[in-house]
Image 1 (cartoon, rainbow, N blue to C red):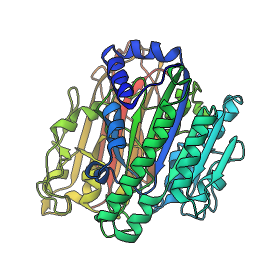
Image 2: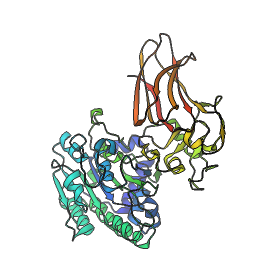
Image 3: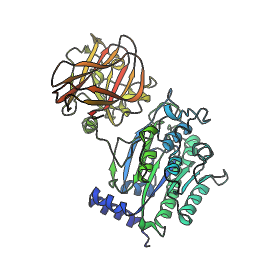
Length: 495
């Protein structure tokens, strides 16, 4: 079979994308699906973009770049144990239960790694994992994986990269995970703002180039359909270190090339657990809802009304914790949505006067360490009612604001399901209430929040009145100097 050079790989990706997604999928369907995941421990996307990293930059040009953020305490600290467990299992720490690097109480039997799921679904697949940090291959990946290699410390990343190259060159793996550690080492020793950190990225970039070149040099490469993903477990502070709640420590990313990923594309709806889900779907494995995965395939983005607002977001007005250049809030809802502030108090912090539309990178920096970092299941732009932050400036009255959805079509006399992602932190007399009205009628309460609710997706069965053709949802938040409520991914569909 002919071999493709790096330049040919990029040109082929661009040509496939210009032919349209249907053509690209049709071409891929005739080839054997294979997955390569490369983990760069402690790597910051912003520093990758500043470093001499031609191979990573080539992957970004050929495919998708998706910056994102993760959790912080009390869900879990920004450490490698929770981070890699989230990447590899496809669920957040509140499910896999890894809270530190000791892995005490891990629920890997209930939420196994994606290579184990692949082996269970398709035992004939060849799976391979190699890591510079031994707990990944000794603990996170199970014995069901065909080959697990923990690189001896004397060999470190050079040994990890050379072993991955050898397996790709000499074997026929279907799914490969590679972990490189030196960027994290440089971050701890010198800090993320150092030249040594940039040098470590350059070194890891060369190893990524060797691994990708081994894929492209395979004799059967032209008959194979490779999904290549590069990600990180956490970020680093400028001074060095991680584990805390700063946005820099909570940073991660996905760089991915594949048949349905447009060259040079940037997305903000991708989250850390999506790596495992994307790998499984690419291998032709259906995601069983019973698995409880938090990830969704990057190949199958889920449209959300709020996400369309990203280009309209503004910089801070009253907030002082948010960097002046960070764009991240608007009061203008997307088409079809509205905000009823007729009972809303006056004054307060401008950004949070009534329901606002914001992002993690903006909202969490308004005030760290008040659990806003645990809003893990909202994606991209989401709606928030934050009485706590609103009350940080002189105000009158109370917080009373209602977010109103478009009218969704429903079938009279049948059952519909209201779904949305929510995160609610409570302090009396605060209350969150979900109300539904049909064909413009009187709204009726279907859910009330008066205790803390961790980040989750709600599904509420609705009994549609006979003859009704539409339903509208209202999210009313009342309170004062209390806490907050997040809403995202709202929709009404069939059961």
